[in-house]
Length: 437
Image (cartoon, rainbow, N blue to C red; front, side, top):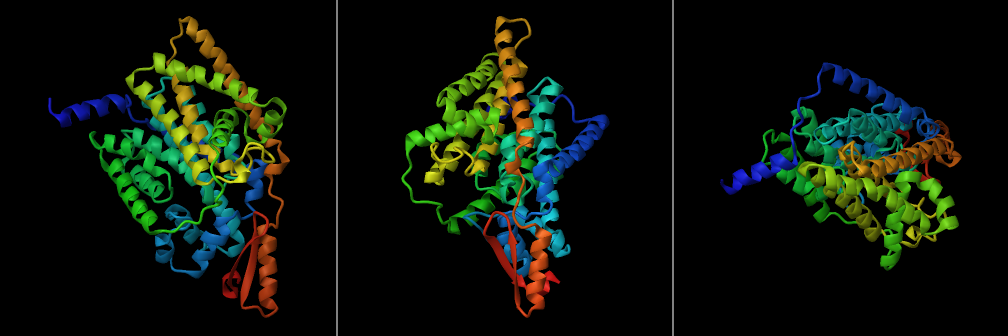
């Protein structure tokens, strides 16, 4: 057997082909789930507020550039050190709408794309999880994860955390529809600075049939790499990294936040200290260990890969952006840069669900894993409901329609440029008066 043949056999073993592509009834169910997911993201209290509040770079960068510069210039211009192709494409479409619809336009687009990531996770996990309910719950976490429903909710500026996870499953989904999934992974690659961690997975896919998806991903990766080499990035802080603080912050932001949500950590950690971390590690480590013991070769590889991605992403985010606000003694503990928890938590849940699915029914270990499953399920459900009642998740700044009305009043008073205020506090951007009608 040649080296190429051995590589192909290994890739085929580690990235298995699902038994069959989704049938017609499955597509109907996935379509219904897509609609339900978008409705959930838009109609929960925080989601409803996003329909009339424009968030951060969605306004001051993407919308402002779409209204003042050419589309080609915007698509080729990095921001923060990397390309944001998909957010900028959405901004170009939103710019075609009346300006008072901008907030709703960004919110709806972000919700639809996040629901698409959930569908890709559901379909892509078929080759690894035997249980359809398990696959459904894992995909549902993309939508209901509390860490993803405050700072990162329904805005394009933070969609890349979900795109990273979607690209992961798209590369593992061997019988995916070729053209749409290839377009998705390309756009994900040119919209996220973290997609480079998925390069080995894409290279492994090249040894298997249906190479359109990994080739599209690697093409996007090359474009993003060139942009990042020549782009400039201003660091958030020059504070020296504290390894102990980074370790504590990582443990709080991933296993603890995965089970409780970011808001609850502010209550639990000051009251109980590192006991919270130990309990979260124990509860999550049991199913991960079960996956390494009971899963097949592909399942064990997925456990190791997703756990490694969880660690790499959170460490990279904290080390590259370290500041005093990220220390665990900071006010609200982990609410600053809550977005850093999203992708690592989703990768951790992937490793957990492989273990829960793989454990045999007739072993004493099953009782232990089942106990962990119920604890995880209860913790996640409680954190989701608690999060939905959290008033701090509802934006309370200047509503977008009020901001547009103020801008039009400025133009009526003789100004040549209009100031549009938006969320978070003190964010605004200027556009020519012709842009506000």
